[in-house]
Length: 253
Length: 385
Image 1 (cartoon, each protein chain N blue to C red):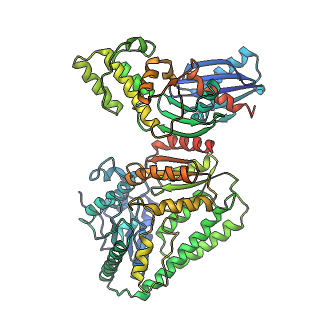
Image 2 (image 1 turned 120 degrees about the horizontal axis):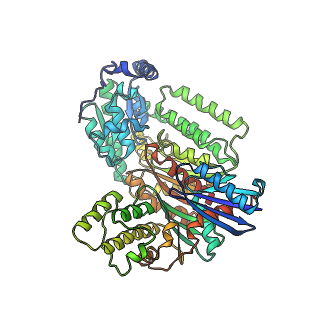
Image 3 (image 1 turned 180 degrees about the vertical axis):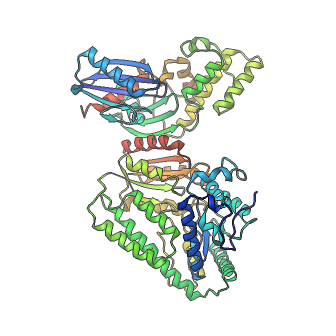
């Protein structure tokens, strides 16, 4: 029996196909306009490639688009991130996910079940969108971010509003501040927001960084600095939500 | 501050009455008829002793705003980052859209939250407003002050309505309102059962409609009938996670929180709120020879976050967690409702630490923009339970 987890995020849709509790394939595509169509197409391709009939597949949707796509079940991204991270690293009890339009801190138990969580989704500060906006302003891409900030000394960015922070960054650039230092400042500001959110729940042991930003070691180390504790991640961290959805689908499949 | 296009002394209609929708016009005319039979006194808070208003022969009606459509006009005078309930209330009065307020002979304010205090200052420039000074600590001196304030309020009512309020009249209303509180409690106690015999949405509708009733005897009969109907119908509500909802007042605009809980498979079994059981739980002592002292002792114990310290709220929530076998506590603060939002940390420590019950705090606005976010948070909370 197969279980497919679909994490329909605001920026990317992630897919995790699992068989008997193990990941068979992971895939990621930009979310685009029509999540429903996109998911259907991806499902068809995955079923074809692995020779799976629809009756052998249980689909669980998560993420902000979970209600707009056709699936057998819909589960929130909080539950799925905890389960997905538990699959990737069973020792972890605290998950920080910096997503496209929200960020969240999740505390989970030894089975990957959520014990407590807190979300910031009222404001862009501290989200992936904030970082993306600032990178665009500074003409940088996420893929080359780690190289760009290597050896930089973070400039302090004081605004907590994404719009005002952008003005501040433009001001810093105009005043001749070093581009790499501003970039490092943007990362520090994102990490500071996430750490502030984490302070509102009881962080346990090692922190796992999931979501798209986990690909940047500069983000991870900035978070370590702010939290004053080790932050780990995994190459599959961006798929944590999708993997968790697939894991969640197993008892039903 | 613009001039309010409303008249509280004449029973005439707003100048732009013809532009109202047919339903709105009908409602206005209905309220005009009712207000000719019994004068309306508008209130904004459960701290206002309805016993005294009724003893004066008037009808207490809650004027709290429950829609975001009246917020933009209010933002001309009040800050944008301000309690939406206050802005909505102020806007509905300012725009002359509220039929109850339009025909009200008096608006009663009280010194509960800072937002409302400032709103009453502006309103009093235009219409008769009586502000009750509510002390915010529970001790004997405060009870004495509140007793004096309630006597002053009774005197003001006597002047406006040209009547004399005797102690016996107050005592009669204490008994009548205690009976109404008991009747409300008889209905919401049905939620103690598992599965509950009444949904959170039904609880809200019951409490909400009791704040604008013109007919106390009819209300009592209606509540008794409601109880029989709910008690005898087959259990419609399935077994589900039992939620206690507390925090800022849940109004028509924030009932989306109850909807989000119940559509994610939970049941709100206890509504610890202003439109809820907050002012219903404790009865007024009918035996106390001093009726004003009896009223002061009841009202000062309403567990609003404007009180300091507000230990009554923790005690009541703790008690109800056990009594209603609550699986999780949802604490909803309105955006910019500082005292409830600040009190949340204390409540979280108590609920999750002492009562070992999962707890979530969320902020809600009057606009529907946060419906998706609220629903995600609450679905995740219910998945967690």
